[in-house]
Image (cartoon, rainbow, N blue to C red; front, side, top):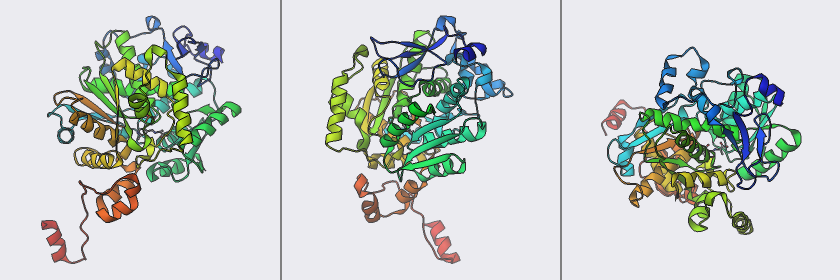
Length: 472
Ligand code: F0G
């Protein structure tokens, strides 16, 4: 494996893998396929010796690449920043044109959140080829998979990872895969994609956490390449969301970056991206990260705000985390939220997220499914729209604004992680069902009304009635 990596020009002294556990810190070659530290079982980082990297003097230097549309690596919104994730040589990069997403000022949504005009920006990651932010990570993981000669791939998913992996597998054609999803647990748009892209879909009678556990076992025993965000190369790709946000803001650091929290890959990647940029002097200060849980899937919220557990310079209280999960198991407490993308009990990147919160002075909030659906309708009415999990970020920003944690004049970026068409059922239900129907069908999620419903008007095929409906 190492021979192969050297042959393609990645020097082991430039990029390597390192265990995040303070006191272990074991190092491994970029060519090793690990996903967890073989010594202590903790998470791994991809690390770089920046003194050996070809870093630009200013982030502005990346802008020139926009002009080079004939170069697939310059066209990609991920690989345009290759110098900031230099673990692969050009010839191994697997790109399908991911990461060409838009960050837009959104004044109507700013008003809903309670921010001054011009202070809210929405980062639309749903504009990726598979309709979610996952493509940023998948391009990096597929690239690593090719580097190490993987022949098969696997993932567990609440839907978007499976859609993204299926798309890369289909377009690239070299790494067939299999996805495990919880039966009845993923939104229709996402299931439709995985089926259409022709990947093998296994519907497990369980939830995401069950699938994740099984996938880890299979990846280990069968040596199948793991595409979940436990894979540190996924997170290298997701760092570029931060670079594009900075680029859209003229390379100014915003006050807040708000992101929904599920398996906690994005929050971990964002923290790493900002920390690395600060370490090499490409940004002058850090923004604050706000990670938003759904109230029905609030493991991170409880660990941070109730258990008061923190990264603590790397000395995480593992025993208390274990006790927390044991209690959760004993109480038979299972995640339940209409935002199915983030219906997760045990986020695999928990510790990296705690680290990101420490690096950024970050905070965690939670929002109800009612707040999520109302915020989603507002994002739709005031922008391009998003799927429910993405709206958790906007609902969270509104709550933090109301509590005075975020001020009206601060610059806030909410990352909208998935496209509105991912979950059409929820959207149509919100806009068409009356309060009684909503309470019957979604009451179990605490959803009882649709304050921002845009109700269709049903009329007979009669010109007068149609005119009356138009005038109404
Ligand atoms: N938003 C969307 C639309 C997602 O699909 C996910 C995760 C998240 C937010 C949470 O992101 O894990 O980085 O905290 N979806 C995964 C999946 C779990 O399988 O598609 P995170």
